[in-house]
Amino acid sequence: MDFLAWIIVGFIAGAIARSIVKDDRSGCLYTIGVGILGALIGGGLIRAAGIDNDNAAFLASVGTAIVGAILLLLVLQALGGASRSRRTRR
Image (cartoon, rainbow, N blue to C red):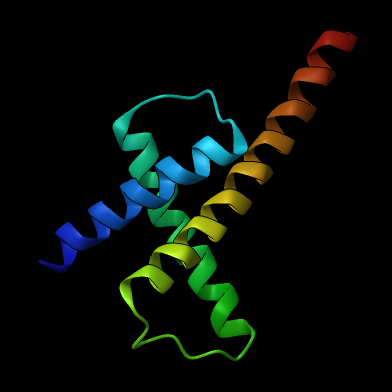
């Protein structure tokens, strides 16, 4: 059951983050992956800040995953944009 919850939260968080960042990549697995990685990133940042959210409500967990997914997508866009601009200069 936990695995299914990770997939659902990952899809929700990934879809919301992709719509906020205006990510043009597509695919259900990509969206789930972004959301799950975002949850890991957001959770790591929350723990690094000293906040204990082990018993957090569902919406707090999704919110953490969304913030992490947004950060992930912004980093991916920055890396992708830099490589594209290098290719066009040559």
